[in-house]
Image (tube, rainbow over all chains, first blue to last red):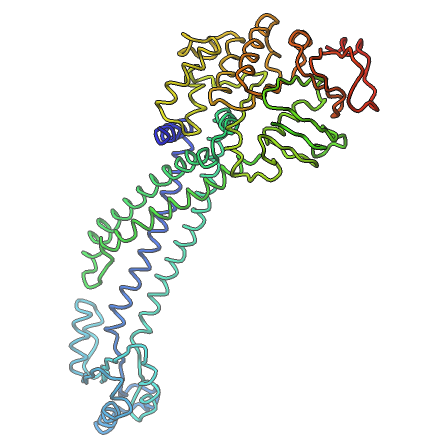
Length: 304
Length: 249
């Protein structure tokens, strides 16, 4: 009986303020889409980080005839100098940090380069003599590249010690910035959504002030009076959340999985399972936000 | 039943108190008229009994509860023991007579079965059988007030508060309403009624409490709208002569 009464009040309220309810739905839809995008972007960054960081190597480049960087003096590194570096890599101080390493001579570097820039004009300009010899080192813990840099960069014949992660960090910085932008927009939109829900509920309460007055007079409990309004707000926000969740899933399904992973097959992207993890977060945020702001709005209205 | 102890009520932004150290005791089963000019404090007293307001000082006990100490969460449950009727009826225009009365019971969580038994009973009691499916605008003023009374008493309250219930009605209809209120009172409900209607007060000869400027100036059993007796309460207050007050009405 009471449940039916509460639900019929909710239905009445929703119908009476249809335009406001639609705007609540739209605002929560947009704001939660931004929230979801931000979360997925973070997930994407983490996924790419763990993928690339594990594969990121430290390169120990040797001097060439054209290089004057580091200890180089425009003379290529001698085989003895290369051997000295290898001895360091094998030594007891460095070996525990190193998972694996291999030597890349000029010919191999040239072939890799030709592979990478196949069809590019620069590929035809490069000769094996221009390439740099290097040791490619996989560390046990990729974050400890500084140890190698400290130990090796002073050695004779070593041009530089480069951690590939430093290239990746720039990309991640950009991605991070965009994800923070999304979070910022999402926060602003959520504030707007909360205020809009509060206004809608107050409007709804005002249009039912006669009933509210009589309810208070005959001793309806505050909870009973509030519940329909809170449910009203939650229903409107939940519709928005469901739309946002649908948009999230659709973006991942059709744009990320359908387009991006076709175009960039080497990169692993967030999948549907990640999107489905975000869905309950969106629904929860939407419902909680609506319940809180509706509660505040209606209790302010009911205060004697 | 209802006890006011030195109750003073000053509304914010006004210097003159609406009620000035009012003491009053209403016993169970009494029928009390509260008379006095507009602004004399009648409505303020009713609001205080309903706990819609709190007194600036003094204490009020209703049904054995100290209203200063009752927690705000318990106020709704306290109000279920009170019925209220207003001059402007305050019915819900989009609900039928039956739904208006049933609404009261629904919002305090009564079962469907109970509602379908209690509402026709109370509608018969107020003389509205056969009009359950009418809407308020299809009823006369007197009938609307009967709906309001039915709504107020359907939950069998111990106290019925009536704020000028006949204020919008013609004398004949008013008498019908008063007969109904007397019947409710005869069934054991304490009735506290604020009114300007001298004819009704004179006719019923019940207890009369007269307020002037927020003070009780007369508390007379079996009195009329205008006293014939020497004032019993607070003799330091000068009671205005009968003539001008009658002129005010």
